[in-house]
Length: 313
Image 1 (tube, one colour):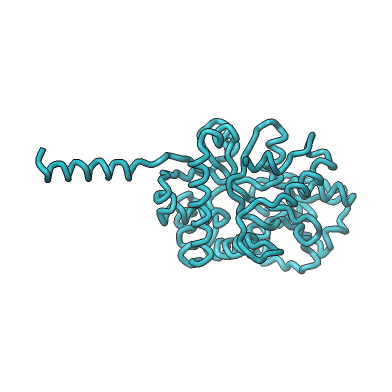
Image 2: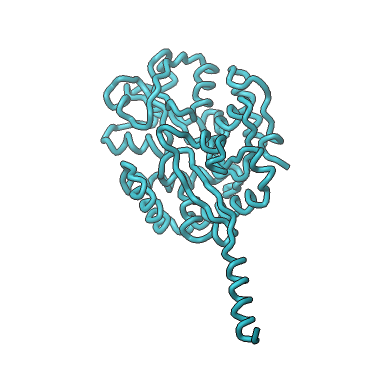
């Protein structure tokens, strides 16, 4: 083989090595929206590729949740609120948090009767049938509110129709949907959990412990690239919104640009730690302890779920 042929052969080998990437499927906990903008950015801007990862983003369906997918090894990572992750761990499915994005709780209760939600004892309150409501249930029990929970899927129709007296909502999602309908909402009609001693972190990225133990380096690279995606989103919100809308349209999600812009802005605000005023990207031990205490005392956990078992060291 002459020198030129050898050089070509070596280039081909190097290119093949460079192109070899670990395949990975990531499933957010809900349909395409700005709540997951950082992961879309990491995919579209090549941050995952640069980390040696071939990441496919697959959203859950009505028949298959993100948790089902990771339990069946169809997906390798998902997003979950801290409280829900703790409940799943308590149910016997060990999970490991590899990245924390939320530093603040986004949940609110909105009243439709010009009332303070704390004065609506025993009234009907909408609650997601997909979960995400553990802290709200604890609050209702602890504060002796006796709410009658009425499950809903993913919209605000029950509230608008008057079938319920109040509803749980995320400050980045359903709250803005209600405002877009033209309903006037005063601040005294809104109970923000983070302002009343229930500031429990929400979204983080989780893997089953079984998968994590076998793929620690992959988990680290995915977390670092995802964080890079979120940091880029903070600095480039207009372009990030365009990326989000591409995913929304691809998935045929019924939404609008204004709502997704508001969602993106709120999600990014919620990522800033209240004390340090920084984007910390870490699960706080004190938040785990607070969530555990609330849920254990109110019968939502059968045992103490600790920080050390959620963060594999």
